[in-house]
Image (cartoon, rainbow, N blue to C red; front, side, top):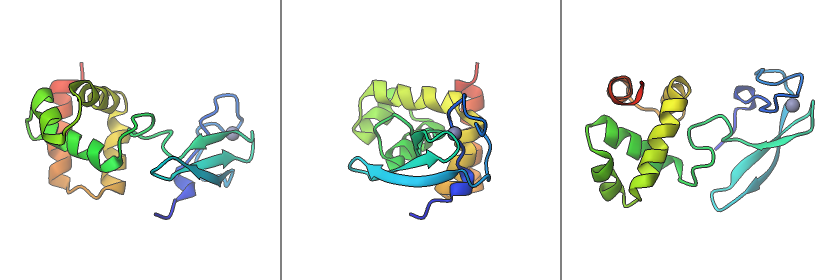
Length: 136
Ligand SMILES: [Zn+2]
């Protein structure tokens, strides 16, 4: 998958370009892991970080398809337990995905819409679910 570097920003709070997109300070470094996660580098501060740093997927050790399916399952009304059973993952894993989604709420939804091409309808369901069940 071709990376759109303009959508990434430096996650280092000490960097002068922290959080800014489209400055051409982000470059690709290497890949790691079985899923060939792309490592990126900020040319301003020289720090490396994962392409997933700002997404719901970062640090979850799940592939994007599984995370998405878990979120959609929940959005369609499956309980955490049922969702874990259907997806063949641990209940705690589903809870972690949910917690991640809650924290990243808007970011997650935009990301899902952009990267995974959910339909507006699926996204609506997910949004409704998050508002009803996840947000405090
Ligand atoms: Zn930086």
